[in-house]
Image (cartoon, rainbow, N blue to C red; front, top):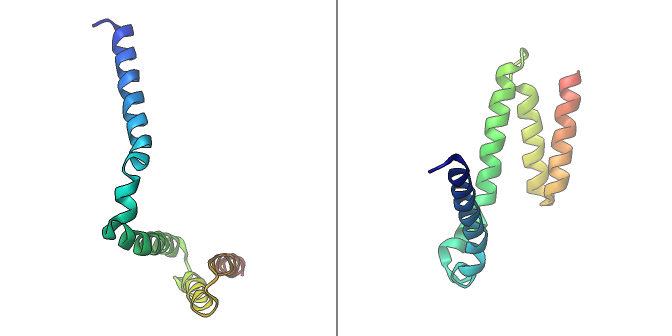
Length: 106
């Protein structure tokens, strides 16, 4: 196989795979809407991913902070409190980020 035909074959395979992956939700949409496992994942997965991202970020930032993890823990506690009381995700995220930035500058 020449270099040109190899490159064209690889590009064709990548295009077919990409097209298939993009079309899969539309092809299996009826099954996805009815399946109880998909509904359960839709309810719990976003929160799980956010918690994992939060834990990873807080742990990484706390390791690099010479004053300890207190600033991160205060910001996380504020986010949890606001989310619990108001149930407004955007408010919780903005307030927690602002509190963390203020605490880091002090």
